[in-house]
Picture 1 (cartoon, rainbow, N blue to C red):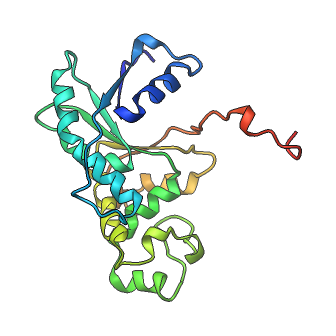
Picture 2 (spheres, one colour):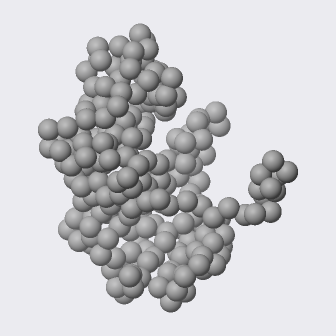
Length: 229
């Protein structure tokens, strides 16, 4: 569509990211910039035994000042900022300073989005019914979530990863919209719930845009198997 895209990645991954994007079919090299960010030292902020997801989150959080500086230096400031689950702290870069629209990209599906946004709003007794008594969790306008299908992150309220990631569900409505890797034909019920102000729309408060299906290209050399031939 003629958008000029700037991608911020940690320097350790910058070369790989640039090669991946520039070698994508239909990619216009004149419309994509890849900016490497110094990898922050987080050794004083986390323990060696800390869950890798929390380490990654801490690393991304520590890059926010650098991202702010890089955007400030850009001749043409971005009109929109898109972050993923680990980059939610970057939503603070919008507002008066840069006047950007902000979006959260969910690489998973709408059902995953429904769960992570609804879970932090649960009353304690409802949460215990699901976690302790292993009863299905009702999602507004959606099929219930079986205990067996619940993400490990949501199973232990005393765990650090629970305390860190579950509240993130309350951050999504601070963006201007949510981009979800799904499409209407495969998740019509869940997407409709996000549009209904009496169901999930009451929690999301911002539009959820289905932009899928998006998938990684598969290297044929890694999928050779006699059963699949």
